[in-house]
Each structure stands twice: as structure tokens, then as C-alpha cells.
Image (cartoon, rainbow, N blue to C red; front, side):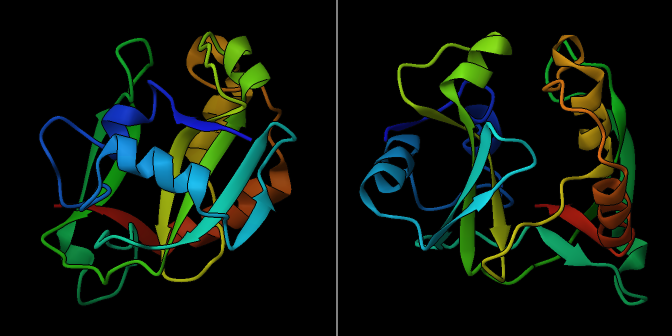
Length: 185
């Protein structure tokens, strides 16, 4: 099985101007090499048959991305409308500023099959392509954000995958993200 970083994930995980809330102490080539050479601790099923999650112990200083919202940090929440690419419509997002989260225990690579990526207009030479990565304290999946679930249900033309909305998974996602937010350095 071979794994590569996709053009979609590369600027998010390894931006040209490094940010504290992305993967640290590792180049894109080193990241790919690690995913291809070091077996994951476990493989989780993703939200659709074409998606797998490879759980690796964090070998970097990358910090947890999702932070619990408390009365102490609530004043640090920010929001704005943003698009992930030039082709997508902006959606409302929120994040913390000015926090120093703990170092993540795990990096969980989000993989899409070559076939699914081709349906979405991205061809890769490998079997699997990295479309994202979760930085977590526990070796468990962070629920997909509700807006990402909705975008996926809208279809490929809107930046999604065409997977219908799972109402129960959506409710679980809302419960998690109501009490958590990502952070930016």
C-alpha cells in the first residue's frame, strides 16, 4: 500500500509560511515517508468506504488541534467566513487565538482511495492520498465538523465527496463541536 500527500492537504498541513497549528518538525517528504514505512497503531474506518484513518503515535511537537471551550478561554474565540480553496464558497468557522494547547499524543492521517480522489478531480499515483490529519490526545477520531459533513453531502462540485448526510453522525458532531474549537497560532 502506498500513500502520498494530496494537493488539497499539502498547503493545509505544511503551509509555505509555517504556523504553530500545523504539523511541526517534519517536512512533507518526511511525513509521507513515515506514513509509508511505519505501520499505523491502528486503522479506523472513515465516514465512507473510500476513507480510512491511520493512527500514528505523534513523532513531532505538533499540538492538539481541538481544544475544549471553557469559561476561562471562551473570550478567545474568533469567527469569520472562510473557504478552503478559491473554488469553494466561504462558510462560517470559529477558532481560538492566543492558546497554547498540549502536544498531541497522536497524528491521525485521513486517507482517501485513489478512485475517490479521481472522482473528485485529483489523480494520484499511489493507492491512497492524505486529505487531512487530526492531531489528538487520544488515538480516536475527532468528529468531522458539521459544516464539512454538509459540504460533503452537497457533492464534488461544491468541494465535497458526494456522501449523503448521516443525521446521527451529524448530531454527534454538533455535540462535540459545541464544546470544542480549533485554535490558530
